[in-house]
Length: 609
Image (cartoon, rainbow, N blue to C red):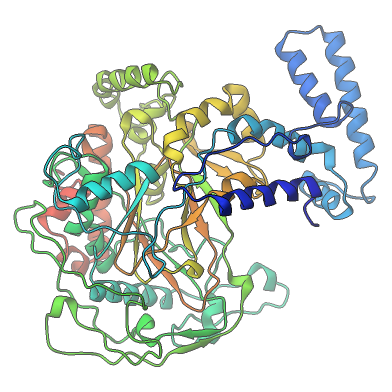
């Protein structure tokens, strides 16, 4: 099962180079040793023969030549399968059986490595961002003014300039104290309450015995089995409309941070929309203690005091969040600390409940993953190219054609053009809010994604992982993937986690998943550690994903994406607003009570009919 010696040598060489580097930006060096070349394929192999068949077809070879090459391909395939145990059927089972008996099934690993090689060499050099003395990624204050191209030349605060410089270099940025501790505590309490209201489920592995899990109770560790790690701890619904989640989504600090990253000229929020997304919970997987302050109490009042006062619909104020320090954001390690009410409002303090003792449960760990929430082949726009000339043309064409597209009835709108995919979403279900994230193109950007940390998120707690600087090589990487032929090859492996693959969705939207076997991309990945109340934003062209939880604490977070209103077609804006209005109506008075004038702008319902 171990890596072969040449591959292991490549890994050691890469790790050694990373450790030996004393400069902030490492210089990528090509590996010259033939033994480290994953793309070397024997001449008389299935992979080489398959490549020959494809090249013959593309070159317009005669039918006789194609039949002869295909016959040889069939013979090589049969010879490989003869080495597997009798009765092995199905592609996945054959691959698994080949791995177990040490047979390279059809030389696939080498073939896919050869396919990936041109794109892999375009990866950015290793560039790990700085951290503070407590091990958290360097974080910045909530912006005092918007970023512009002149930010470096104006008399801006050092924090503003430093945050923009950090984002431009690494492709992500951490803003601290965006939400207060009390706000985070109230949100965690609400999430736990929602989980406690879900009926127990039967794991697929227990259908034989019919074992039914107990209903989840945050204070009863024996019930943690009721949660699942298969879907990365995501909320059951693709868009959540509960009071605290909505309050965070329309927070003035959140809007300020999004406005900067999206390069909006001011904080009026007149050109800013936020996504309707959900939360995630990673269970503790190591023996230890979950503090009582983390868990809160199902009977406690989450509070309704907003951290901002917004009466005009503009982002006029900033939350007065509390600095969390190096320890966990709420309470002391033994769970005996106090939890303050929001921003000091009220004089009551609640004693947190007793801590929970955890055990080693490695099976609860989520799967490591890296991906892009976009389709590289359609991101370039109408012409499908990624050079600057094409992008400028696409942006111009998109502006001129938007009114034409929106004049069509929703059911008649085309989805053949990449930038029209999102504008054609009907918003007939909450799922369309998550689809909206993947329906992006250069002409409708810039695009950013974000996550609010509702607990201190240390390295072992699992969570957001990014590949710093990938946005700066994105265009070259896309070109190296290949055109339509490359798209077909990456789509072929859409169900194999070992391999990099394209998952295509309706209308050409989709996502690109990086394979477990892609050592180069995973070696460049960095865990984004951040304190409670922090807001992490990243350019959507930055490769990102999540790492599993290896600690005895929870990882709890809320996702918030922002985008520009002027890049959204009128029809889509109208349908989207109607869906949000309906969801808010179904959510009840408590949720609607937290929606300010600013919130209506951010939701795009300030002009809804």
